[in-house]
Length: 389
Length: 138
Image (cartoon, rainbow over all chains, first blue to last red; front, top):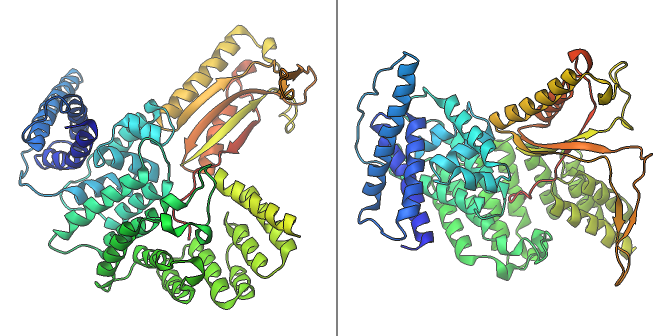
């Protein structure tokens, strides 16, 4: 096996092996450490000598590591004269524990950052060093973030899955971080969501269609990644993107996943957002975008969530359907404290041919931008309008 | 999570200091200096343990202005300027859940002990970093 193949294999198996250990009654935090150590061994040995049964190999090595860790833990406890009972032997049946593991890693008691880090390590099979590099913090800091997260959820029962919506929110955040480095967090989020889709489809109560909704949303956005930036890293807005660079196979998959989810007739915000993304993806050129239908979806979405960002984006759609003045009227009802409020106002004023106000709003939008690429883009919009006057 | 830069300024510029706290360090006792340094070290350790520490550094007060000198020419330098209004003494970068938490951490850093072991009430400048683009914005 080459190095990449080993990595892929090992990381797919990681949550399965962790699930088995935890089902056998091992403490989650210790089992997670054991699996992490086994993964590191696998990455070291498999490229030279791949095992016949990789999962059995990992399970054996992780089991051995677990005993070592439990022994040193027991020794520590003996020193403190507080030796606890051995964990009882639990069921060992083979089943996909992805949802169980994810709902534990995304426990509502954890902050989003802790849940993200723990999810990437325990279910994603990434090393602490890789996660630290992805979030641009030192490894020691990330190690502490992960061990604090584990301490927070110590003692939580591991039998029934928790709230799947909390899991979806964490996966959404991982996708949306958009960090680009050695590890693509977007790819990682898609991989985990796909895994969750597969594992929850097998559950007796059936899968929440929002899981597929989120997967579709990710695919329909990720399909455009090749067109989002220029070679020099400048942001390209949706209406100016070279649509031939979009990944049509990924769009097709996203639309299929979405249609299956929608057919369950249980709408949620991820499905509605995915529907909006699908309508954008469906237009061969920006001018052919089906804005009336997008606006209808924003109205649906506004009924599902009170997110002010939805209200802001809805104002953009109103501007496309009923003209910029109507868009500005809709914008007047949106919280101007949102960082992108000025950018939307600028765009609508530009379309209403009010260049002066457009320039003013583009300039303040640039001051309020939360990313460097966005700021550069907005400054250029102001500069373009000024030069054209 | 968002990253913030905490900037420590030398005691010039910025808002008014709490009366009685603006005593230059060379007028402290050696023990007071040790305790101050110790507090700063422990603060960084605490932030590492809470999973929020990114980095820190101290800067020499002596700096030089440098600019392009034109085609084929060496860089042009100027300074140092003894009377500069404001100088940055050091920095720390933290990665925290909210702006409120960034302020709380800055306030704790500002409570480092000075003369008589009392908090120095130092003003720290807190600046958010620009982050990455969010993939989903429509």
